[in-house]
Every structure is written in C-alpha cells, then in structure tokens.
Length: 204
Image (cartoon, rainbow, N blue to C red; front, side, top):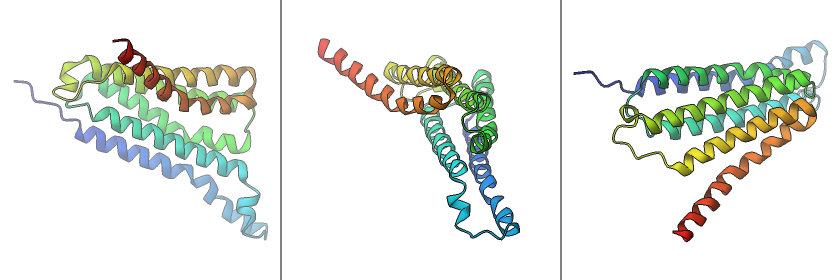
C-alpha cells in the first residue's frame, strides 16, 4: 500500500520561502541608512528622497502577500502531493524568490523596458504556476482526495488573472510606463466571474 504523501511539509517550506522573500524586499531600504549617514543628510531624506524604492517595495509586498493568500487557498483543497504538484510549486517558489531582484531594479530604473518586462514577466510566470496548480488539484483525485472540489468559476478566475498579467507584459513592451497600471485590472476577474455565475443561475 502506497503511503499518503502529506502536503504539510511542503506548505511549511513554501511559507518559509515566502517569508524570506518578503524580508529581502526591505533590505534595499535599510541599505540607505549608511549612505545618508556618510553624506550627513537628515533622516527624513530616507523617505522624501526615495519614493520610487518605497513604492516598489510596497507594491511587491502587496503582490507577494496576494500570491501567498491565493496559494494558501489552493492548498486548502490538497490532501496529498504528487510529482507534478511538487515541481509546479517549486517553479512558483522560484518566481517568488526572484521577485526582490526586479523590485530593486524598479527603484532605480522604473520605466526602462527591460525592468518593466522583467518585473511583469516574473508576475506572469508566478500566475501561470498558480493556474497550473489549480488545474492539477482539480483534475488529480489523488491530490484533492476528499477535499471540497475546485469550482469551475474559480478556475476561470485564475485564467482571467493570468490574462491580466499577460496583457500587462504586452502593454509594458509597447509602452513601458503604462505596464504597471494594467495591474489595476486584477480587481475585475472576480467581479466578472461572479456576474457570469449569476447569469448561469438565472438562466437555469
């Protein structure tokens, strides 16, 4: 009899990597203090003179937090891990571990095409991994076991989210300064899915 592969250790490991990535985001800001001391600048310049770095930190902190919350919700449906789930989860962790690097680039080269595409491309890769995870959980009975089934509406929401990130990459390639603003559309997929769900309920 094959021993059940509990996902607990995988979840704990994933949470630890996410926590480290969140911590690394703030390091460029802490590095500013010795520079200010060496220049005999007032402490307030750590904030007033570094808005791009602060904004990029807050943006990436919110993005990683959102990705972690989605990951947490996915694994509420996981009762055992499989090979594909394990590999896809590590690919997702790679995108999270990389994110502090393009985040620091944003602080210095905010509107350069390479920086925009590097940052948005990392987010797209992370979203693609989430979408792959949800399909694995939905289709593999060994993975989801007796957990509540993943709804079709939730799958559509993941696909729409990934579409928003893909659109952001395209816009960022054409007009780098506008790529970031496309991320505001991430508020729409859940509303679209809810409306489609209501229409199906009424029509049935």
